[in-house]
Image (tube, rainbow, N blue to C red; front, top):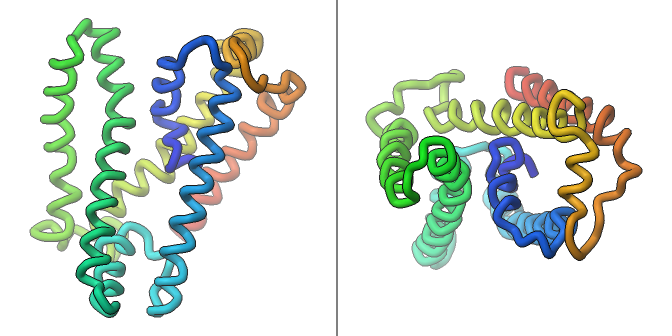
Length: 230
């Protein structure tokens, strides 16, 4: 959920700010979580059987997509067709992800620096292109750079920065901001979340949100480090 919903880096936050106040944020969040879970389950039903059938490690990380799966497609009947379709659809998924991630950056530039959307988008495209080069070159000329040992590439470093740091730490900050008196505060949060028609956020979860959820996220953060470096 940290990764697929980009919870810790503001994507859902900025899209939530664009929603009509006629519907509750809590209700719309439920729909998003359900759809995201269903898509993840369907993807798992495709990826995991293929990995097990060809003896591929399903937890291979970023290399699974760009190194392992192409070898799987090469071993399949009609693999070139299925491989092409897979990467075409993956490109669409990547494009929508980039749009989601960059929307809050564009919104920030528009609100804080008073840039037009066109200017913010053009500059964002240039920044995105430059920032993507290390990842692209990591599978070619820069493949000798192995940040975490043999077999790792630049993408593994970027995945570590985002998945193991920005997403959980950002989520922890969001939770503390929404529940702490030093941030937005619980009363303001619950009022905003329950404005409109639809399912309401249970006010009885205040204790869980304030005390237990931050601990759970912190444990996930620490366990991620242990798993990665262990």
